[in-house]
Length: 235
Picture 1: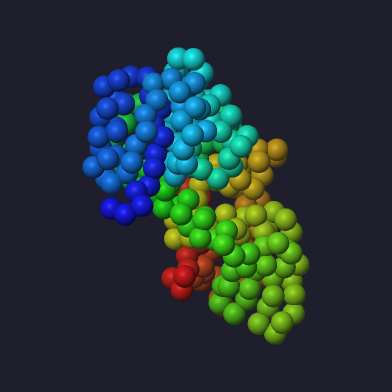
Picture 2: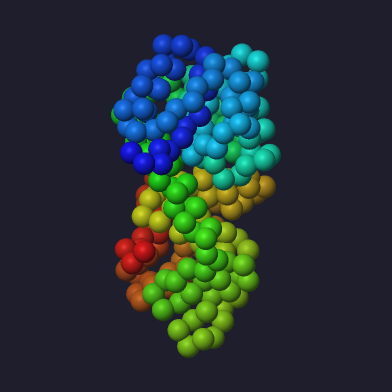
């Protein structure tokens, strides 16, 4: 497989480390491993990765601190926690540290592989999107840098910063459901916890902007119990 995608895997339990590494390699990934947080950070500084998978309870430096340290210098690389710490408080804490996903042990190997594939696919979509600063939906064009929507008749609808950020997130993850946690972390940065209704109102606004028939959306969908999804089969 040309240009293998690279994964940094940090896990102090040797049998588990080897089992996950083997299965990821069978999927075609190149895997670098670390058995403690210090080694994980050293490897991260030396190499470029498409995904980082971290255990939380590790020797030297724990996974939460590793994630925070990575996020100080890299906000793009997807981070997944793979941990026995399974309370809601642990999960929220992990997402606040900048994780994109949180899987608790014991886990299903097939589910892990699916989540890994999704995170890497999303990050590649994000890279594609960074190459341009505008995106066309139907006959309207979003300009992310100037917070503007250029309509079919060339008139301009100003967008708020939150609208622009949420549009960018949904478009980066197009055709995938995006969880409320991901939206909270990326758009609201956990400063304020908006209610579901607040995010719903943004989606309703986007439907007014872009949908030919807002009552029967083709682009912006609410996924009950999960979050939201932007669908665009033209791109």
